Amino acid sequence: MLADHRKHASQHISCAVITVSDTRIKTTDKSGKKIKEFLQKYDHQVNLYQIVPDEGDQIRLAVEKAIYSEKIDAVIVNGGTGISHRDVTIESIEPLFDKQLPGFGELFRYLSFQHDIGTASILSRATCGVANHCVIFSIPGSTGAVTLAMEKIILPELGHIVKEIHKDIGR
Image (cartoon, rainbow, N blue to C red):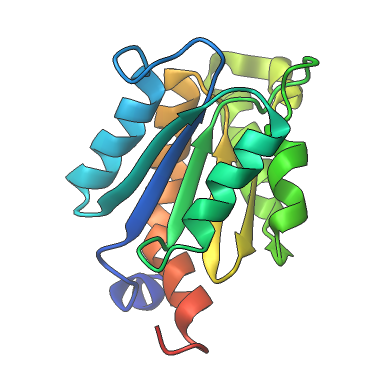
């Protein structure tokens, strides 16, 4: 059954990559570059790439720009998912969700626990949801976390998720 879903999944997804950081610029954004490389390796398009500071209004505006663009089907946000005072990514994007996919964060933390992070995985607030017929993934900004999320969860399910979101709207 799972193989059947994946066989009929969307193959070429239009994506936005948003890095949340006060210190990174495009030349030093290793995690944003890593996400773009993964997407391009699997023949997905990156139609928007942006770095925004850890400021709630700027994070929200960047994600809204992506989800209201007809060129974007998936948004991957990295950074700002921890518990420090400056980590406001989750508070900025969750109000945009029409539907939340709690299994993403649960699975990410479980895999992080198994991949040498151990019990510190409880500090991650990684999340996923759907807004305006667009899937939004929010993951930590470390390259290890990006690699884990992309390889083990996002890339295997991205086409299937987009297909499910679009099946009732004819997109």
